[in-house]
Image 1 (cartoon, rainbow, N blue to C red):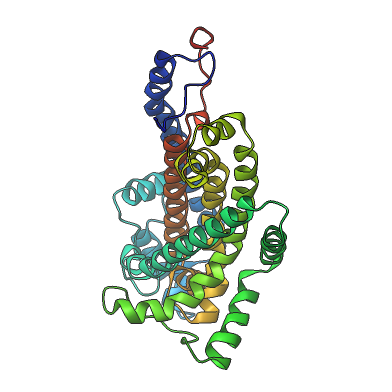
Image 2: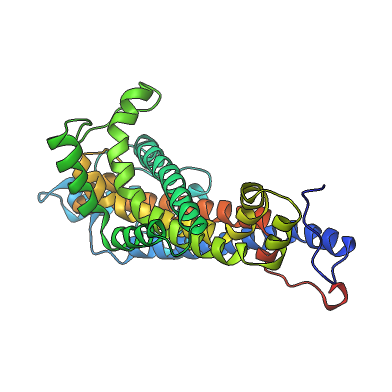
Length: 343
């Protein structure tokens, strides 16, 4: 007996082919939208630096600087040019990977970000993995027994975790795991390529603190979607045709019901980055959030602009990955409706 589900009523094999053929065009629209958002974000990012009242030349040269010295350094920084010319030059270099130099350390901004960004990416990657594992396990377990004590317990736990900020969870984990049980260190960082085992010991607590809110959202969405999908006629019919409940769930239902959970996962990426500002300080992580805070304290505009632009790029790439995942999981996620003649 074939495990494949039938084409929906009124749909033909040609309809399926036409829907699949529209996927590249849908992804192209997503890419165009991402490019537009990136351009607007770059304008806002540059504008924040432009409207700043910081005088880099005076700050670098000190109080003894003469107007001539300040004018000379302004010319070296390119700050004596019109704003549109400064923006065009900055964006043109930025898309090539050149984010300028720090006003205070004179180090390339790209090098500073390249040293800090892997910390955030490794922690965020581990947090996303934990969120998927914990959220999927909780959502599937609750959906298989709707209305049971397990279902109510998972729902209550997800509601609780969804109300706790990441820094509160981080402090609680440090108190319990590091201070009371002394199982993991409470702070510090070891690069993954240097020692994977030690990296995991230092990264597990901050990743877990960031992942619980996302895991709760995934579990809630997945549980709701699975319960509804398992009650659909096609799922009931597949079970009546002799397919095991596990095969129906993991072979068909889970793929069709995973869309909302994948969307929640994508929406969690900006929250992970936002939560990293506090989490990095709590766990003493040398990430991009700490780099941004130091730059803000010094009014180091090139570093601030660079970190903001890279952060926006990371979020856009994550959203593109989510959209591509939705297109692969469910043709209904494609934005363009089917033509009337194909219905």
